[in-house]
Length: 364
Ligand code: DCP
Ligand code: MG
Ligand code: MG
Image (tube, rainbow, N blue to C red):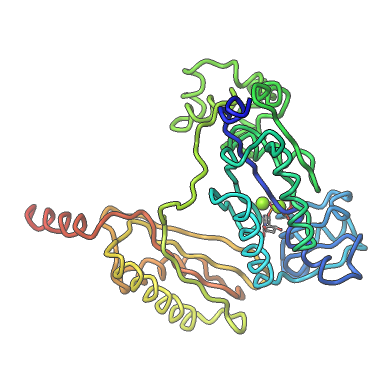
């Protein structure tokens, strides 16, 4: 019986409910039970980062302009984000997860996959493990998480979202397709709002309708992702929970003491960050083909811009040159920034870079 149980992979996806907003409610008892919005200022085009469930009843959602959110829910309490606190909570929850299984893959500050396949016993079934996980998080952090339990990452992620807040949704082995079939296609990984609209126009709304399309249709509609999305729509997802992801990028970022739009100062900061990243790359002996610039404006809008090239870069002046170009494209009159970050990804080894330079020289 136990062996039979162990044949199935057991993966839990756990995600905090209204993460930033719940932390603010927890740390200020006056906010408990009230609509809370964490994000930028309404009069400076700020957006909502997190809305408490009390605020969501009024139609408020993440990424909505704060000014609109306040119109929908005028009694909401607005809070500025406290990123340091959220990071601490995140570290703590990952430590709690580690007491359940060493196989953990964090996806962001507030969520992770846990592979508990080998932790199952007759009594300690995956749903019981998920329940204990929720209890421990509540006990230690005074915050709720929602969990999804199934045999795969994609289904567990969908399941954890289906009964928020404080949910525990179990999709038993063998019932994956029954679970997925009636859901809207945008529940699946890789189907964002634009893709959803495009597919809906063809009269396809539910995962069941999607799953019945042929391979040719999938390739035509999803290109390189066709196979993955087809398999996921059929409830097949063999991707393992990855503990140590290969590091995909090196970056350095800084929050400014004061928001600034001073171009010379911004360029200086970009240059310093590029130096940091370059040092890390040199230590590892790697170089990357993509330079990324991260910006957070004074109204808490965060975005990234990137540029890729054939020959990888490693030296700070090269990284800085590209990052500065990206910066120049984003600066406009009156715009101020509170955070800057520079990163490099798309790694190959340095030898490859030397090779390619050599080849270029030979080509002359
Ligand atoms: N976040 C953000 N901007 C977004 C989305 C999210 O700054 N557009 C931040 C704030 C969220 C946190 O990331 O609190 C976690 O994101 P989630 O998508 O998990 O959203 P929440 O935890 O806020 O709500 P939910 O209960 O739906 O998970
Ligand atoms: Mg969350
Ligand atoms: Mg999340």
